[in-house]
Image 1 (cartoon, rainbow, N blue to C red):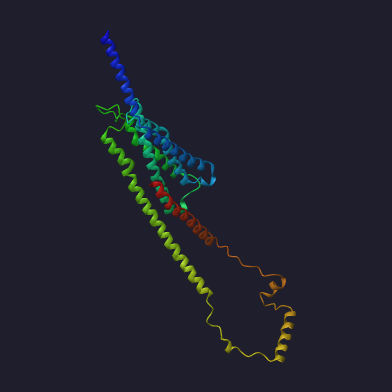
Image 2 (image 1 turned 60 degrees about the vertical axis):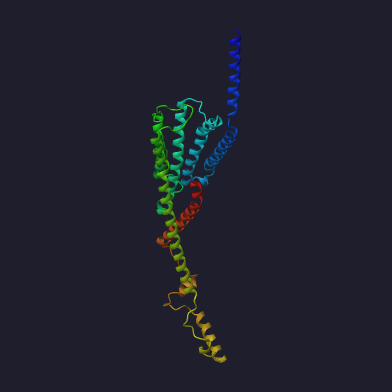
Amino acid sequence: MPTNLTTSANLTTSANHTTQQSATNYNFPALIFGLLLIVVIICGNLLVCLSVYKEKALKTTTNYFIVSLAVADLLLAVLVLPLFVYAEFQDGVWSLNMTICDGLMTMDVMLCTASIFNLCAISIDRFIAVSVPFNYNRKHVDQRQIVLLSATWILALAVASPVLFGINNVPNRDHSECKLENNNYVVYSSVCSFFVPCPIMLLLYCGIFQGLRRWEEARKAKLKSSMQACQKFEEPPASLLPLASLPPPLPPVIENDFTDLTLKKTNQDPVPDSPYTVDCKNGPVASLTFSDSGYNQDQNQEKKRAKINGRERKAMRVLPVVVG
């Protein structure tokens, strides 16, 4: 009997010690920081989605790509980060089912890849807008942009799908950790999610920069030629006679006779051979208008190009911040 009491007392003591030790292993700073990060990500991406949904002026094709990026980040904060924060709160120990772990790894890879692919799709869309601005529809989503948005999510799912088919189930798997276990798949997902899209984005943004610089140089050259033409038009003619070479004024008697003769001629009927006197007598002469449709079309195209490239310069300042 004393032996049983001693054994039960030792078990109770060891259980209490284990409970206290596990309680001290909780990582409260990681929990607080993780919850704050989740709240900030959810609020920020919800504001982006609501802004585009509510404001009609923001419903442009570029903003639809940004909404797709915001949705990927929002799903990451809702579906993936809470379980990671829970695992970090338990000092990195995974205490849930391994099936949940595989689903978590699938969502993590897919949503992170979708975010990077959305950034790549934005750079492709901006490059098309700079290269062929007249064929770019910024107010309505066309077939090309639907294909880009669909390919972004389909390719992201394709990169993450091997985890669903059990590639993470390796021999001697540690059930106390939730991570990608297959090293070959880690290399594959890294190449597809980062090392391929990153050079593509860099090349596209270099092309955008070169296109905007060429357009700016052409605009400056055209403005310079227009200013030179205006200066030539405003220069006084060099064929005017100086004041010293003008004839002397008429004597008073001859000047009076000349004035009377001019008044008599103006009161008479107009000369039939004159092509302008009848119109001047009946009313004002009709003004001439130039309605050259080609000229107006060129002017409208120049305005549209200037408007589009103005947006591209703004995008060049904003998108590197987003990519970073």
